[in-house]
Length: 152
Image (cartoon, rainbow, N blue to C red; front, top):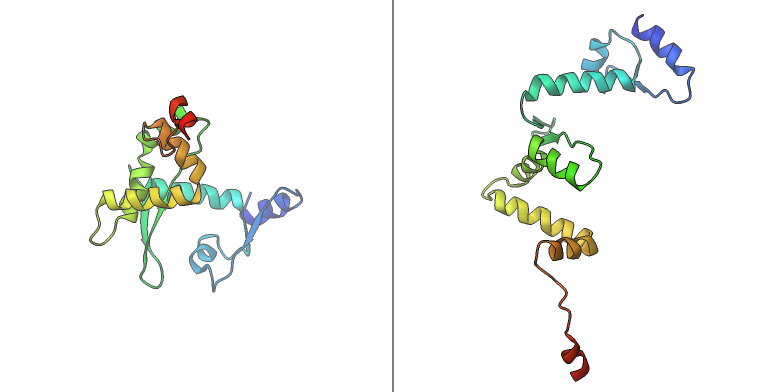
């Protein structure tokens, strides 16, 4: 089965998602898919995963450069089920370290990158930040004891 036939068959299903390829915006993909004007999301997903395996080898991130010369980084973030799964995946794939490393550019080090990320998350998710701080033993909200409460 070729890509055109498969795309036609899949388009009959409402859940099928096709992407339009054109020589101007996606010249390499258009060549790769042999001039076909539509390609399925599943084909692009498989292609993307194979490219990540080939490029990254052991890391969970692929560094690249935009057309304007700006450097970027695609980091693979695994889906997790719970806190234990999150911690296991973070240790196994090192995706958080990759993110911090990418944030810490120029004259800053990874501690600066971690601080930037924590500050951003703390401002955006202040209640979660407060709860996380308390679970780490750094309470941000001081609770008064009964004697102090009565004295007020």
